[in-house]
Every structure is written in structure tokens, then in C-alpha cells.
Length: 269
Image (cartoon, rainbow, N blue to C red; front, side, top):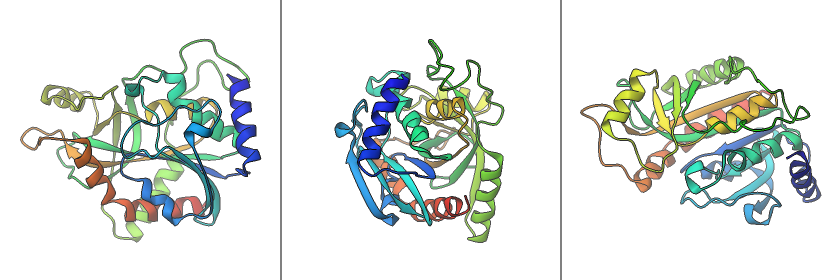
């Protein structure tokens, strides 16, 4: 694996992707955040050696390098999912490349269904922990040059960054939630019984991504910060017909607040 990581990293450096301080993985409907970047360079995933290709609407499939919040960053405008037919190693491969490009922190966003009855559509939830029901991307032979065999996940999401994000939200009078994110394979949205079960076992929101990327980031010692945009509700009596288009629409409404939080967090690094 390290050989592929090195090949991809060297290609991106040759294209001018030099010394980013942070990486961002943007989820469904949140790609507009890149409009705030300056001095941008971008490459389609299909032109990057060893990269998979995004196949989902709302995931444009571009790697973008530039300045944001006063810092050099690299952004994945679109991610990869297990339900697209990619294996766990492929889903998380780009995170390893970002680490080898030099990022010091990984920021992630996703669209999720809220199962906490206190949540409302449009809420931003800072992820404090997760429940991973996807195949673990670390299964298989471990390369000690990349990370340890048994990485600790006691602080999957960085406490300092969480605290800072909550302060930023308060300063801007944003309503912010905290909670546990649960990841399933998809691509089906959940049944009412599944929503109920996920709430019972401790989830506040459910989605189809993020946890493999965070597991791989922590395997390499990268601090992580992640947020979910609550785009639909899986609460008894509030469950409505859900489509990918409706999820995208609700996610796009939060972009201004998301941009503020991400900009100030990255500026504080």
C-alpha cells in the first residue's frame, strides 16, 4: 500500500499540491464551501493515479488545493462510499494520501438522518464519537510504517477542536448539537425499526460514510474533527419520505454556517 500512497503523493506534489496544513472531506450537498478558497488548483479524481472515482450525485469528484481561512489546505470535493462497490481500503485510501501530503488535521462533513428526538432538520451536529457498522478498513495485513496494528480509538474526534468549534458557534449565535454518529453501508435509507434500534444503541445521527476515513486517520495519528448536517429525521412520528435530492437540498442550506466554523477552525491551527 505504501508504494501506491507514495506514487499518488508524488504525482500531486508535481501538480503543485505542496505542504497543506489541513485536509477537508466534503459530504453530500456541501461542495460549495470550496468557493471560498483562493489560489486554487484542482484535479479530477479520474486523473489521479490510484484514486477511485465518485459516482454519487452531489459528489463532484475533484481534489482541490488552495488557501482557506489563511492556511493552505487540500479539499476532497466528494468522497467514496462502500455502497458504490469500493472496498474499505479504497474508501479510505485518499485519507492516507492527504496525510503523506503533510496535513496535520483532518476535517470531515456529511449529511445524516437524525435519530435524537431533540434534533431538527437543518441542525449541525458536531460528532463526539461514532458507532461503526461498516467493514473496518484496517482488516488485513498491517504495515507498521503507516500505523500500529491496534490503534486506540478512545479519542476518535479531537476534544480541542470540538471545544473550539462550540465556542465559534456560540460567538456567531448558531444553534449547534453534539452527538454520536452511526455509519451503515447503505445505499438504502433506514427502516423505522432500524432508526429505533440505532437510537437504542446510542446513536444521535446515522449516515453512510465518515467512520472508515476517521479510523484510517487515527491509524496514522491524524486528529479529526467532523460534523453532520441533519437532513432528515428518523424519529417516530417525524419520519418522512426521503430522497437523495431532498438530502442534498437540506445540506446546501447549512453551507454558510459550515463555512464559518471550518474557516475559523482552520485559521486557529
